[in-house]
Image (cartoon, rainbow, N blue to C red):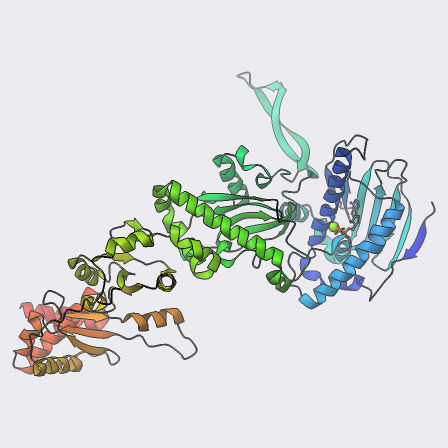
Length: 627
Ligand code: ADP
Ligand code: MG
């Protein structure tokens, strides 16, 4: 065979400049592409050997990555199937090239951020960093001749003989000036760690120093001294945990694997080992991290792999939003990776995978809930955030979620919604036969309201989580016969209105005059004054925040389309309280004013709302009164 020149059949336009110039942001993926090819070639040979199509010895199959600083080359060598000159022409010059053309075309429409994992550019991605690429290859086929291909990043190539003696392929990249970072050991080491950490074939990159016993040199106590030796540096774990069978794994294995993925992290709460063959292929391990508050929630902790090749840790569009709070790995060759994100969202296969993962997660939660309720309750603080997020954001998950969602009351007891409903059913039904659940989002500040509710033997839920206001809406939506009201939304007998009418102790004129006195004294222009004939045992003055207006504001979460939605605040005066009668019977405006101010400040104080100058005035006034 003599060396021949040829030119690659160009269909549309010359893609080399585009590969070089426009795909600049992810230059590093060339290494993943070339090592995946080496892995494919090796796996193929192992397969041929297993079915008897290849009869020779497999030998050491490791892939070797090498830097040559002097020659400014990076090479990747495998012991796989190799290629004949004809195969190079077919696979590299024709098929791979048109594949790369197709990729570039898609890339130009989808743009940089729109492509998931940038899979599909394949072999030609090497021209992102190299001015010249060489292939030396010897096919496994009997009697095959070694071939040598070179291309300098134009559509011209040469193909000829190679001196390569052993089976497999060596790809040599002559790194160009702009990309000399890829001649640095640490850069390559970093990339191998990122993309190839769990590849199924061992990958060697340089050597490392190890310390072993030296029998020649003994310490005084007779034990051997240690000596350093240089050993091959294998950078990957070629049989990662998620590929193993769950039956042969222990809790410690899962925990240790979690540590290798996220060093220095707190141990996960539990995990789900995914293992599906049909109708799609999916393996992986999802971990539930321990979280204490919303700030700790981190998305983008799940890593997506395809046949053990790292693709991305931006798994948006592959797993539902709420599952992104989990950690771990998902490996599926059935997720189309050479497509844009918008395509991925509508892909039927991806939808199936997504809903399978959702179902598995729900099943697991239900299983732990049922098998060990106590442990589940202990972990609820972490799990709850996730379950509530799932329930409000994902319909499929929501269908199951109420079975294993826990509600906690102010006594720290846990209930499912059904359990809780039967607990409060008798006591907390209003005149329309609707069960009214009470909750607080701040046990300390709303203590007076909680106490008033408890005096009537009502139970109060503790809902102070970041997602609870959404979750309350969700529960009401799911359960038509339920209303859920915060304890400080109104007078308790109006929140749970049993239809009993209370006689007013004061006359109508007295009530009017009391209302006017308060209206004059309460120096909050936006607050309303309301009078109500409540139980004489209830507090005299309370500051309440009506449920609906407050929820609207919460949902709006700050300034919305119409600017800030003003919060409605009502000063509720209990006209049946003994103090109401006392004020009504007072003469002398000054004494009345002091009394009204004092009562109002007390109400504010009891709810932690008295501060600054008003607090100072309150203290002075109280001191004067005590004198
Ligand atoms: P893909 O891997 O998607 O097929 P590539 O552009 O990465 O596309 O590679 C094109 C083809 O070149 C491969 O399908 C394979 O036939 C051949 N090839 C590339 N690298 C090697 C290798 N190291 N050993 C054997 N064949 C290879
Ligand atoms: Mg490839």
